[in-house]
Length: 426
Image 1: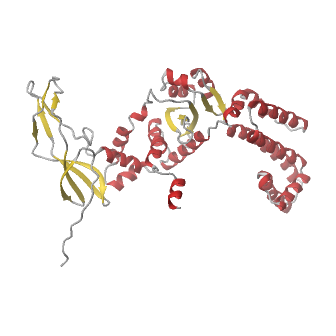
Image 2: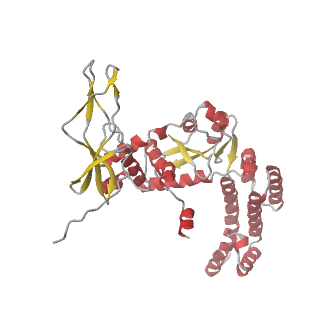
Image 3: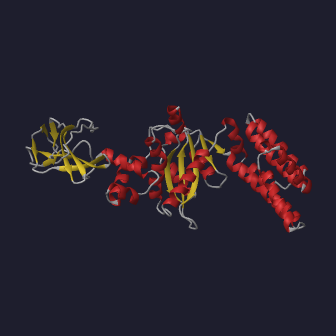
């Protein structure tokens, strides 16, 4: 017959909580604990302060805590109360490791939030053996502080973008992001819609002093966010990220390319069209990455359709300006030269140059500090993943909870980066 074994386990109990005993509870574990009680109590009914005299109930309370050995664990304690000598009001002393009217500890709430990152309420509830409503209540309690922006928080750079909540539906939200720390962007606010009112609703969450401290606001080339920020952020400069500028320029290049290649392919046979399409890969790639054979193929393509060489050169020159221009004055001069060159070559880039004239200040501001809104676009992509994971999210409040969990709280839950783990392993 197997002999029973004694196992010693080091318990990580909440601060000031004392271990009293252990009890097996079904398939889980019960840890009997007690906690210090104050010497003075103030009556919640009449306000009288007096020396505490505690009475204990003849029952015990259980609060769900972190799992032990992969099984549920509860902190078991005996509730006590103080009775006021003046009015007779009985006031229970709350356990320091949980909030009122719930049956789980603070650190269990934090554990649930970590499990929600990249998941949803139903999956987490099923894995922990609790209800989805309990998970939702935990999220609501934990994210109360995230709904308001700390008035003492220093915010120097903000970004704005819109996200579609459901495909083929006119459901959008505006997301305001704190870009002060480029390595740890944080979502500040989410508002329903993608209009002026939505942008204003986000900015209203900042105090007047915080709005005055903002140095840059980074937006796309839409008609909403730039004007609103210019009015509400008096000391901030508009930054149009190079990603949006390059997209507008690339759209014009693609339009002219399709027009030129369409006329050329109409003259070719089916086999020749297949060969021609294969050559377009070299056209789209970075010329510095091409091998000698690929360069030869690209030159053959230019020989067939000469206008493609001009479009290719325009795109390369445009990228080089944004990569190498040391300051805004140099960038402005080089862009003016590129503008004149496209006109000399007979390339119709007027649509792009009109947009450039309208957003010239914001585009050139990029070169002052190489400011980027890459983090904003990354959060936008994360938002799309969230909506697909949830098969569409309609309320802006629900989306705010999900994006805060996956962006703001994820950085707190991850202790080390991939690079740090590789250094440790090496």
